[in-house]
Length: 289
Image (cartoon, rainbow, N blue to C red; front, side):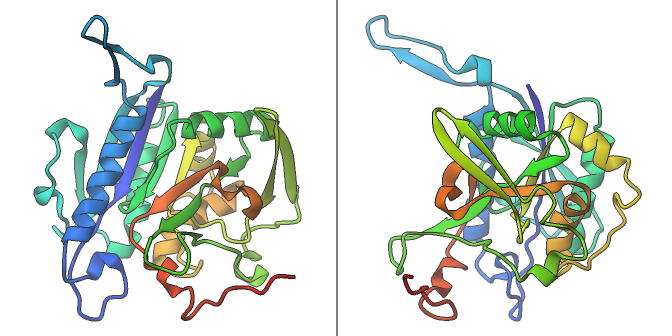
């Protein structure tokens, strides 16, 4: 399988900035982007081995699931940390632009479109999202086979900690229905049910389709690129950052996530604890019914 990843990366310290890309200390951002890139290669690349202890030889492992990966990192205005990454030069390509920082997601869309016909999956990631599941694309492919290419499964984004009130928190729970109502009808095919490895699983239309990423197969990417709204740079969903990442796919596909009871079926880690640390402060624990 051939997979193209486009990653939006930006860093510029700003004393008034509220995003991690604007913090004074660059080290957390360097760590996040490094892990984002390395995990993609280690999970989905072909350079995987198993050590045969008896023969003292390393043999190839996981080759049927191994993929050809290309990672293109989109930056803007020289506001990036690529020169501080300790990674092999072949791990990624640099695509510099002059875009507005929070519109980098649109530049990533253009990169994906310009590579139509070359890959089996076309993917977008913000630069602090880390996949840990080697069966990630197997699950995505299974879902589209069951639900059709017009249905898109988004991962549940989470944060982890050992020093807060909860060890793990999914950070993209429901928005008020009115927030996405102009762009999607969540009553259309509101739920899908299936069974995988003998376990029943339920998917529901996402009142919050944002995950800071998306993963489209070749048919889906081609279909989206042919829509009139493709690359219209509409920023009317939450903010320019969320719009660049999510509004286009929300206008195009029926977006699903697994229900909270099965949130970990398809998930992606958000580096840090910016959302999780709100629990017990701006966010309260719900009382049991």
